[in-house]
Amino acid sequence: MLNYAADEAKVIQEAPTVRFLKLPPQRFDFFDFAEWDRLVEAARQDPEWYPAILVAGDAGLRMGEILALEWSDINSQAGSLTVRHSDWQGKIGSPKGGRERTVPMTETLHAALKAHRHLRGRWVFMTLDGKRMTRNRLKHPLWDACKRAGLRKVGWHVLRHSYCSHLAMGGAAPKAIQELAGHVSIATTMRYMHATPGALRETVKILDVRRQQVRGNGHGTATKNGRPDGESSNRP
Image (cartoon, rainbow, N blue to C red; front, side, top):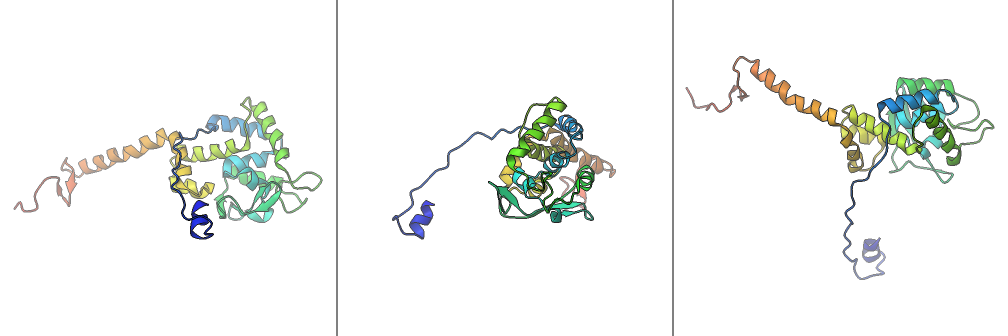
């Protein structure tokens, strides 16, 4: 804003230097795999809200994106959904970051949306009298499902955090998580990498596999350019 005021609006002579504050890493809550399974089982008891919980936890949609999801955004044949809009204070606009994204659906989510199909209107999640859902109406169904599952009461964004964390723990590449979640910056995605000790161990195993392959070549030593490592190419 200060740069704009100086360079374009010309209302100040020059913009002062502003340094960003250094903040500690942001902490966030998420359900582990066992907790998520418990929530899903509890949510099945409420067919009206079960698919909404899955859209958040199995596809990573934000609350505003859930509210703005239309049936035309669901591609059953391809098994995917496209996030095109978001609800902010009752108004429909672009998703955060201004970009559409297409998310493959899990089999569980795909089946739940098929069973949820209705003719009340264009929106996926609507009231029984044909009105579009609001943020206030979304609060209590999730809390009720958490209570039935014996879990702490959380907000809808925890389900999105769980989606990203589960992908990270499964070894998904940060870039893939960024695209699926619609993160503008890869720095946002990297917050979820703390939950990947198993993935890191699997990555380090690449070294063991590679060394076993080298030992299996019959030389018992690492090779470089087709020769035992350290052997000069000038050797007769």
